[in-house]
Length: 285
Image (tube, rainbow, N blue to C red; front, side, top):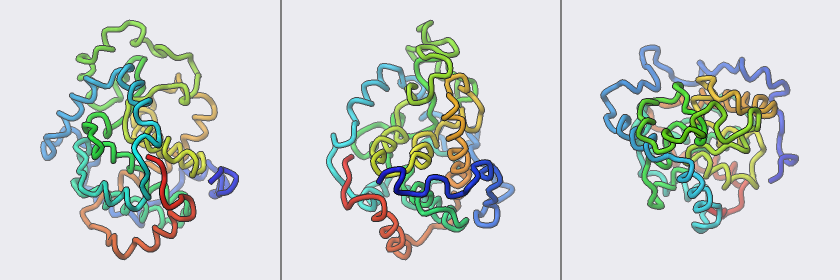
């Protein structure tokens, strides 16, 4: 579906996105600390980022961009992909060990409870579906976790940034300047981010979602930028405007993680109807 066929700016004033109030519908425990990477409960998290930061090189990313172009791995429906993904537990996530379908439904239900547009709800439902890469044989360090640009200097806003000293690109002077191989203000469409489910799902969804939803999917794991404020030198004006949508989406992704499992069977008819508004029965993966 084209951008013109869906609500392009249903909230009327994008500045109002900063004022979204989600506290009433998302169960946030004031004692719970999210994204606590020093916690010992999930020992896999630190090892995950050691591998991720060691092996996510510019050459690796470019190769994966070519290998996983949509259509190279068959066709599948959206709900079918959700069920396919359901056995995966994300080793990079320190906040939850629920299944992926639980997280997707928690996110979309929080968005729905706020009365936000149906395309926004759908984006919440599918934003992590690119993690099926793990079930196609890819190691988790090349699929999940926070994303960051490759081909330029690593920001200290990246979680566990100390592990980049083992990355071969760390020894390439051209890659270790502020802009590296890029021009200042070039725009994120010209920047290679570390390979993962965000970029993959963005490409899968290009024909179907509005640009605002595509930005949410492509950059929802780009925490160094949307939360840490890093890499502004690579943004153009359009990126800065569209990142208001990314920032609006982030709280629903993060703070909807609770121990209460949604009832997938009960919710399925609603979301299958929503999926059918934007996607055909099968799409290319």
